[in-house]
Length: 157
Picture (cartoon, rainbow, N blue to C red):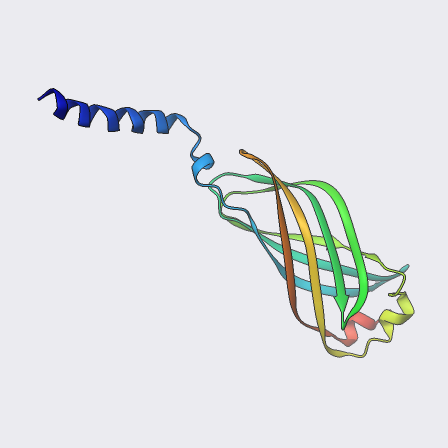
């Protein structure tokens, strides 16, 4: 009889102690980062290039993006990059859209961007994001390739 109580008592203590540990410690998943959109728009000072990132926080608690690094190439040509310290809260179980304005590289002057013909072009985005979480700072790398369309609207003054 005492052995039977021991087998009931030990699992009960483990469950109680486990309940004191933050659940996120056992169930953390790095946010997933995907490219939502790449756009080029005309503004007074020149072309504005933006990469919109869809950041999927599948955790049941908010995490914060504290740094974002992004680089964009179109048809193999480096267009721009950005390394930015920021503080963006990412709510639990939500896909957040984060728009990142890129600094144009030397090879991607306004005139060169304007010469990209309307139509479909191949892009490559790669980068890294830093997240503050209940279990510490996490670094998540991402890379994506795909097709984007430059239209007449992107080339208008």
